[in-house]
Image 1 (cartoon, one colour):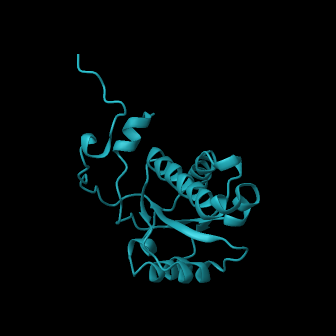
Image 2: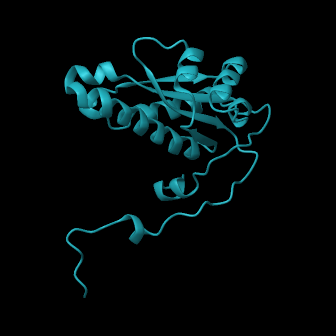
Length: 179
């Protein structure tokens, strides 16, 4: 069993997947359970997750995402949608414009880590035509697609991408005392 820190360190964007290797239903179920365990504003879970295993539908999402081929190559694509109306009922405009998007995003992040813990890989896609993705999914009820996650068994080991140093992204207030 990997610990949390190892899981995070082993998360990479995977763009090549093993052909003809499906995602097991039990693992997919566990990943979705972890996504739904994510914290949400007011515990509303103002999001909906679409599990796309159909080839033609993944091809439509690929087209909506600028023809990023790995979306079709992965056996599953998870589409995380915000449900602004659900959040607006309790939190009004801030719920509609922010909290629902945060809820969907946090659920996607939990899913991405669960994918790694399950021995698979994924890539988060945020650059897509929202209208085309919504049309491909037949969305109604005000759902907004926020993120696509391609999911499958990696056929590559991506290089570790560089990260900014902590002192470039973190500020302590007040500054720690020097000892």
